[in-house]
Structures are given as structure tokens and as C-alpha cells.
Picture 1 (cartoon, rainbow, N blue to C red):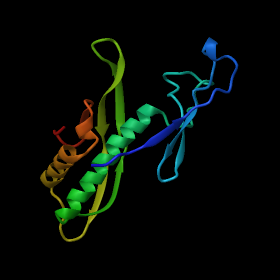
Picture 2 (tube, one colour; picture 1 turned 90 degrees about the vertical axis):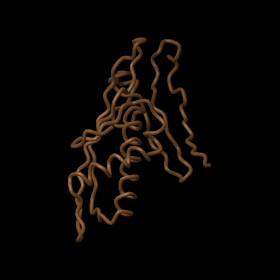
Picture 3 (cartoon, rainbow, N blue to C red; picture 1 turned 120 degrees about the vertical axis):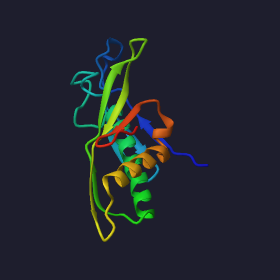
Length: 156
């Protein structure tokens, strides 16, 4: 169907690589021309070998799940006649250890705050249904084993 590419670039900047004392800062470049500074999370790799100002893979993972859910939700809402004026989500990913003791992002909780306008406003049941449909149709949610929850609903 389609391909999606990212170029990840890192370069050694220290003579102490073999001692484990090297920066893990790197960049993510995308086909549209955007380059984003990236780093491991300081919770995984301490400063100065990480940079808390940069995006880390776990944050990007949570953001991609939230973004995909939002984009799918907006599409479905528009198709069903609900006018969305704004959508904000403070998504939270939880790291736990799996059965082998390896850390992983085991769950992501989406906390959307949505503002609607127009003549047709969704009921709480409509909104729950929209989130359920968005989850079922989101490309990213269909690609991961992380559990995804939406606050205010009982749906995954």
C-alpha cells in the first residue's frame, strides 16, 4: 500500500565510546524535510549522555498512538456530522517489565479534551462510540501490542 521512511543519524563525538561514555543524542529526519533532535530518555540513560530537551523514542511512541487516534477520531466525527473545534490529548505511556524482565511500554492512556460546536453535538454515548471506532480503525493501534485506553470510556 505505502511506505513510511525515517532516517536516524548518530555520530560519535567522544573518544570514550568503548568506555560507555558517549552522547546518545541523534536526529530523526523525515521525507517532508523535518529533522527532530532525539535522545534516549534521561530515565534510561543519564545526562550528560542523554538530552532531556530532545524527543525520546518512548515519547514519540506515545505521541504516534495519540496522534493516530486523534486523526482517525476527527475523520469519523466529520463523517458523522459532529463539528470538532479543538482536540487536546495529554497521553501517558506506562513502562513496566514483561515476563522476561525487559522494560516495555505496556499501556498508553489517552486523555482527550474535545470541544464541539454546531447544531449536532455528540452525547456521551456518541463520543464513546466515536472513540471505539477510532481505536478500531487507527493504523498504529492495529500495529502494536500495547494496551490503549481512552479516559471517560470503558473501551480499549
